[in-house]
Length: 125
Length: 232
Length: 246
Image (cartoon, rainbow over all chains, first blue to last red; front, side):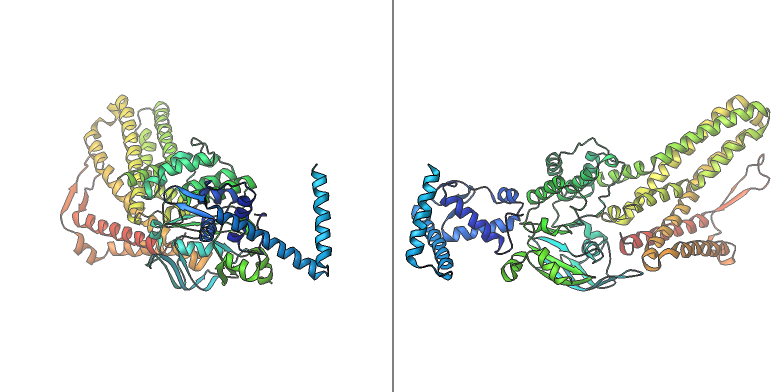
């Protein structure tokens, strides 16, 4: 499985993937997730690992398991919004830390980011 | 509590070499376990001892609390590396024969796996290609609802498509609530996400038995990379 | 029952080629007899090939069981992994060999009968004794064949066991064991204790027109053989269950 690397436990990598899919809207609130077995089949992954991922995400409140029906993305928008913010925060923290390590000032980072986003938006049009 | 395969100080000697040296380990229900190691490291012998087909020179092997011997076949579904079957049967006859001999053989499940594997039920076993023999092996072994499924090199020598369908078959048809799958493989990368734990053998000794995720967490290494370090 | 009949069919399929070849050979021998009847007419000699063919049947069961075991040996784990006790697995092989032998021998008898019809004048003076002898030979062939078969099985099991312990010279050890035990058995059969134990319940068979001497058998002798058969069978089953590795 080239999609997964050894830097992090596989069950967390799968959790990250599901996070991203929810935040990007690929998976919507209330949507049903594949069964553990189907998810395993999709990535040739041990069902025990998928189970662990689902349990972890349930603990975080992102997923809900309804007895006899399967696993769903939580309907609780606040949880998802919280998660969305958390992920944003994490990414920004990482970015800023790397920039600071290289000696950029806050103003430089901010202007650079603005410029970059402007260019990207132009490119999109 | 006793629903485990337990090996205690197991040594297996053949006339000219010692295949396994002082192995102690326990395998519970509910796992997919890979046995890894180089050629001649004792992988096949380990599986045969667990299945009761081989008997230890010293030490003990118990399966669900009973000493492993030929009759362990009742609770262990074993398949050999050579994908050998009775050549006289067709695919379906082989399935029916298996069903007649093993009470836990689920014929409906076998038919289902056979379809998934796209095997022709009327084909003579001896006329099957290597890939199809590997597939038949999966059908006959996984259709048994035995607590332990032991497969010796189920992926070796097969093309990627067949390997993929075999891995999918394992995920679909091994019920980890009641079964454990133990497989030997030198395709370590291929089984990395498939297995819970691995048993690493080197020259007949147990080098390590650990959870794959543990290896990722503590050493941030894939099994293959870890092996490169450990096997020097 | 389904378990066992599936085993039996499997054993039949593993050995049927030899069985069918045997049947074809029976027909060929009958044709040879016919041919000899033409060229060397009015001679009882024409029945010699048939008699030999019947005699050869004494090795029928051991031969079939040996071929069967040998083909299991190609993938021994398949057979050993079968959870049924060894005695059942072995009985299926014996039953299969026995069935084949009975069919083949019956066929030979029937063919002989057909061939005798047109030459009946030739055999008329011996006829009563011939068919009485036929009846005598048939079960005794089966009996001896089964006894030989149990020897083959036990030697095979010992070979499988030794193969893992001493390697390539196991066949020599097994051959030695075979010669030695047969020697001892033969020696014992000529001894006084053997006679003392077995010579009871005697039956005398007379075939005055064929044999000048009557044939004497003892119920004790059959029991002695029976004990050997059962003993060897139990030993084989034990070896397969506990010592043979796949």
